[in-house]
Image (cartoon, rainbow, N blue to C red; front, side, top):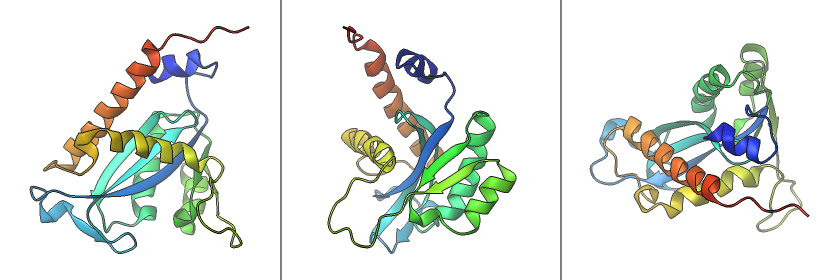
Length: 183
């Protein structure tokens, strides 16, 4: 479905660029202690969803971990999976949480350029950052799915499947939408 949407939008079927980010969500009582953690930055006890999307906001890969898992550690494994599945992928945009040795690892091991989109120090309040809004829009779509507003799944694989399910709903809606006529 992803390739059909991309071709419909006038893009190549396989993406060459993407965006990575993570989202911490509260976990329900059924989530075991083995896959639950505390994200000190956002003060959330639960799980963290790490996602990679293409430039149209279509999901390329997802990994659900305990909330105390670092972004760089999860990104290393997730980007390896995404690079194996999408061979034309060459550029990934990320926020400042992905700096450090991950940039060199991506370039040397995965032949991916990890471009860090940083917020400048003189900005105050909410500012839309280039390319970063794409993945934030996906998180907004996920939160509109009631089942994903909180993590209710016992296993992380089930939580990942729910994210894929929500993305499938979004993609079928995009495919069912009539094409705009070009004047």
